[in-house]
Image 1: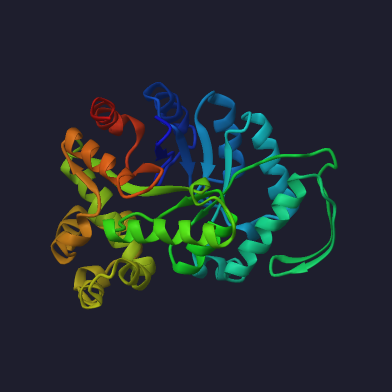
Image 2: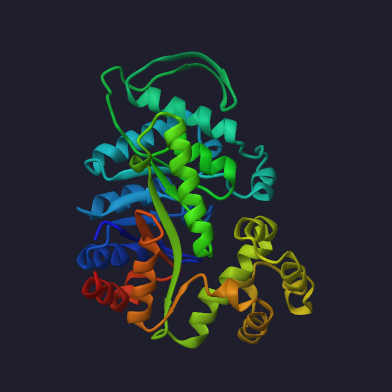
Length: 341
């Protein structure tokens, strides 16, 4: 089932070795792609993807995402070519904008669309064996960049896309697009159309850019406490981080976002909701969030979740990342989906 994916090592983890069991089960279930997000603790992507590529045979390994400016372009380009050959072409280099406050704390500038486009161009030239001399552009100034003149690699590049500028860039320059979690159906359709339209304007085959829906999938056989953490607490965290953009993108009510922010429990959290909130606090926040916002997810029985995952494909996406759950938690959903499709 190449159209199904999941996030390996989702959320907070103590040991990256947990991914070995996840990856093995994912291959047995027939899932198509394991996505990896990057956190600067025990989730550094160079290490994780190398290990994942070594212990899998069929799964695609995709970063979603890393930032282009946390590694020198030569390091990123060599990492990608190494992974490409290590996995026999199963690697996708996925890039994103990251969190501006975190990048600022690291002494790095905010990621711009121009930087991403320039960087993508550099990667493609290096993977084709080109020597880049005297480059001066948004991605940086580099006297000489070169990998190997014999290279002729076709490595897919992905983008995690949220706003219109990134969606347009993905259409004209990327191979894979990962949308954000908790997008309404209307938003998913609009994003797919934006990517396809940008690709067509750039003279590309609009169907050649693979669009993934990142879809919270939380079946009800999980303990209710865990269900609430994976749904209410996760959505609340997104709203804490970039609530204005999520509300604008989904055409949600900005007054509801303001009520969420002004809620005393939310305002009193000393950190991200899914990391610090107690069970009672999460239950309370669930009463503050509009039901419409929480409905942009697959919940309920395994069969109900499978139907909602399948319905995402009817919106025009090429694949569905069953986000927020591990392969073990998703196994009944995958089996129900297999019977459905």
